[in-house]
Image (cartoon, rainbow, N blue to C red; front, side):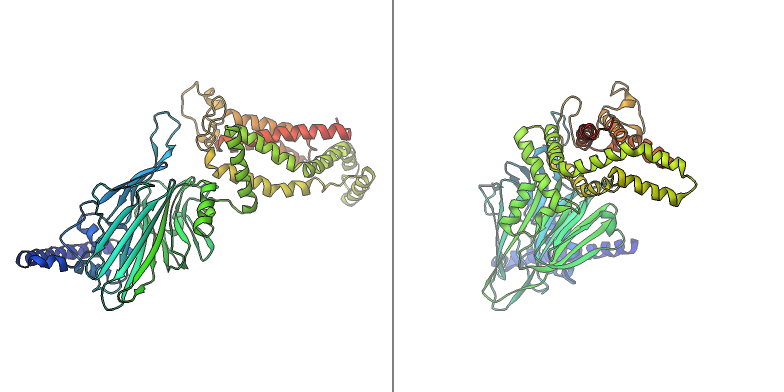
Length: 561
């Protein structure tokens, strides 16, 4: 690793000296030949960025020999405007003219905390930014620097950013647009001004430095892409030892967090290589290097790319997917294995939230609707459990009578089931059918961005974090450090109580060991769910209450005390 760093430093030193001598030559030409500046070779955005002392994120993915090309494409002038303000109703940030990427971006509609004076969420910054550039595998071909003809340019929904560059070899016209949400579209028109064909390559890159990697959770955080219509998810630790490389045509790639994402969307015709890698201590990079595109003499090539940087709002992502034909763009949200259930559930929860205005109440109504939908299945399960509970004294009597004769016990138990018309498996199958539903609900409540910082009632000011009213701190009145595992809030305790009541209504296992284990489950789940989001625990508690009411009704109907 140290040897590699030394080699890179040596290359950078050589490049700086080369740029210095080229600059002297060009200044000398300008002094003796005033018109020579019009014919001077222009520097690529990558080279300009190196001259200004900035680290160009895309430099590592250039084709072999591109570093040598940088010295041949140097020029003495840089654009007067390097950064342009980006602003609409949803975001505010800066677009870097030299790197062709976003240097900073904050989300206006989302705050860092629930405090009234909290700052907006910062998505992109010095530690997390994008860049894109055009290069040429032909080292004698320069790529012009782009500049804005208007020094007061601001990129808004109504005013696109117009950039131009012409070095006598290539003419580039760039139009950068942003919608009213989180999508920036860049259209480049590259004209070959020579009488020979010219090859160009499009590169894009996203770099990120993490002081602390995200904790393991049910929601994927890390690299994500859809390449060749296939979803790819790579955690940061997955690329520590070996980089991920995959060829593609079209699609998109990026980096995702629980609620936010930054992604590059390719031109549908575009072929190239996507790479995820660890580049240094706590530093990661997602990049794309396109295949060389040949522009015939005198002709113009038009290229469109898009950058998404914002909140993972399901309706918006689906709109982008349909409008711009972005393959599976809704999968930026981690729906899990049961996508066919999770996505409709998320739409339903969002619709209820829009109707009611309180996410906590929406969760309660949501749980009630799901319980009603599963009512026939659950009823059969509870009826079977009630009948099993009714015959349980007879089962215990048989176990005592034939405790030394296992074969005879099995025969007598089967006869008992036939006489009482009880099917011991009838209660299991409906419960198994509900497992995908419960998992999908869990995923929905984990990924729903409307859960974030959504208040309920009382002390629950954020449904996406654990219940803060810890029992072991007297619900916040005592200020002392306690281990996270015993930091149990009020709602997890209520969940444990409802689980205990529900367990008491169900037939106890006839095996003494199993019975003892079952008694501990409410306590185990109470501590386990203590660190879960309050919204999830509230849903679980309410669902338990509905189950208790349903079980009590069925037990009375069957005649069980």
